[in-house]
Length: 162
Image (cartoon, rainbow, N blue to C red):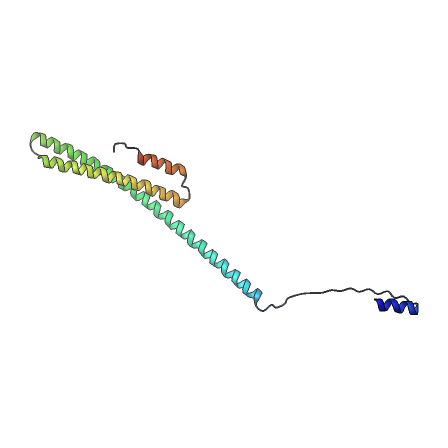
C-alpha cells in the first residue's frame, strides 16, 4: 500500500483497489478419525441396547419367578394350616383315648410334638409367603417403606397361631 501511495503521488493518478478473500477449510479426509469415531459410537449404542435388553429380561424373569413363588406359598400356607388343624384334632382324640385308657402318655406326647411341628411349619410357611410377597413387590418396582413397616409389624407381634 505504501508503494501504491508513493506511485500515486509521483504520477498524480489515483487508483481504487478492493480485495475480497475467502478461505475454505473443508476436511475431506482425516485419516479414518471420523470413520472410527462413528463406528465406535455405533458399537457403544449396540452395547447399551444389549445391556438394556438383558436387564429387561432379567427383571421380567425375577418378577415372574416371584409371582409363581407367591402363588406356591399361598398353597403351602393353606396346606400347613390344614395340617395344623388335623394335628390338633388328632391330639384331642389321643387325649380322649388316654382318659379312657386306650392310649398311653407317650401317644399324647407324640401327638403334642406333631402339633408343635405343625405350628412351626405353618409359621414358617407364612413367613416365607411374606418374604416372597416383598420380593414380588421389589421385582415389580412397587415396594414401599410402608410395605416393609407393615410386614415388620406382622412378624414382631406375638399372637397365638390360629
